[in-house]
Length: 184
Image 1 (cartoon, rainbow, N blue to C red):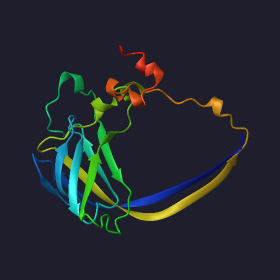
Image 2 (cartoon, helix red, strand yellow):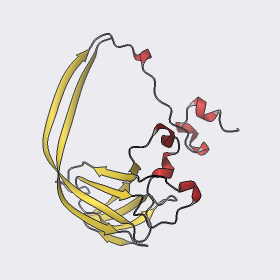
Image 3 (spheres, helix red, strand yellow):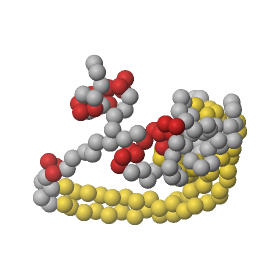
């Protein structure tokens, strides 16, 4: 089988940096509007802003800086940084009929080992009152495009890696191997 591949890489440069301490309830956040920590695991922030979203940026939370109490189940043996990145442009209003733009900042742990990936939710830094969130604005620098053709590719040679199961109630997204680990 012949496969034509086109890779496009957008290169961004770092800009303004700022820090914000999470608060209980609604709190103001530059570029995001009014925000609140949401989700059972306290790893997401929901924000509302007039007309425009945040634009391209990077946000990080460090496991050593979280102010949340740590249960034995979530105790880490090393520093882990959780990331959120938004590469969307902010040049056009994001809303027309409803002038309020909602945005979700959802953090993901990066650099986990294969074993840690099985329970990756444990490694995402939680957000509590006082947890510092670090932001870096990004600006577009340039695009790079590469075209290539690959001959003799056999899709049967490639296998999707299995990193663990999600919750049993999320069965629509589970593979058969995962489902067999849960009683019916």
